[in-house]
Image 1 (cartoon, each protein chain N blue to C red):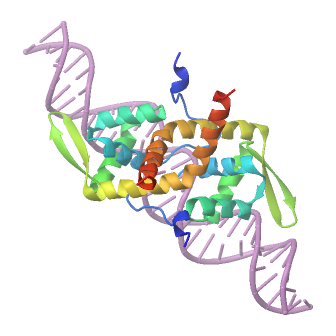
Image 2: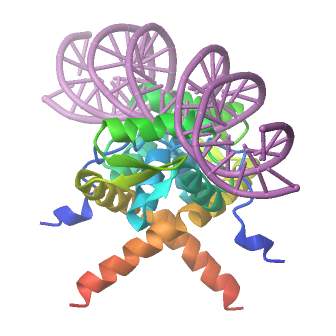
Image 3: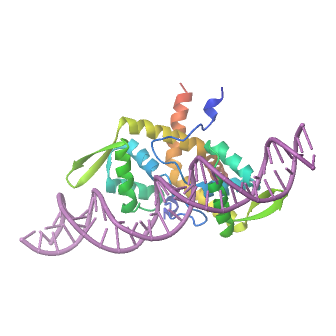
Length: 117
Length: 117
DNA sequence: CAAATATTATTGGATACCCAATAATATGAT
DNA sequence: ATCATATTATTGGGTATCCAATAATATTTG
């Protein structure tokens, strides 16, 4: 019933890869998360869960670059933004939103028109 | 003076590659363009002009996949969306906007707060 | 305790996009 | 006609992300 709220699946006309690390940083701005928690949050956004062979190397790279730190709680490894990571995430958000704003605004306008019939 | 309207440059905290073909399709929904015209439009959006070693193979791939057709006008090679390309571009827009809407909405809200001081 | 589940993690192959450098050629300017 | 510019295009190296398959181990459940 609320199927239209799901992202469902990526289109086939062109590659839709990218911005995984950026999206991880954005998620971590909201709250600390462990790996699988992040995977589920990304699945909710994108419709597909990132492959472990993609997610864990990305997290390792973010840690290597000083964007996140980790602590362990039992089996779980919890990721936290560093200050550098928080600043970087904010800059990345600004960049991303300025670049793609035209696409979004157009999309929102077309949705309004459909709603206002 | 209107420097804040420029995208300026990509952040360094994480990779910001991706969605080149998608952005090309989105641009072509507006109007037909030749290669360098597309390059300039992309530069205006992203702050950097795509490298020819990236742009031309991407265009070739879109043509190979039946998303665009080309015609030549003098030296210029003009790209036009096919019907398949137009449908695909619309689907890709829908997907992209649904996935990244949370990031945009948050960004817009934070901008409103700054404006309304 | 034993079995099932959850979580972290690696390997390896494919592909899209990043870049610098280089080239050919058509058009426009002097 | 000559030179400068614009446009298309390729090569080749690097990296992030995509995927399937596999594994080790801690926690939870029966």
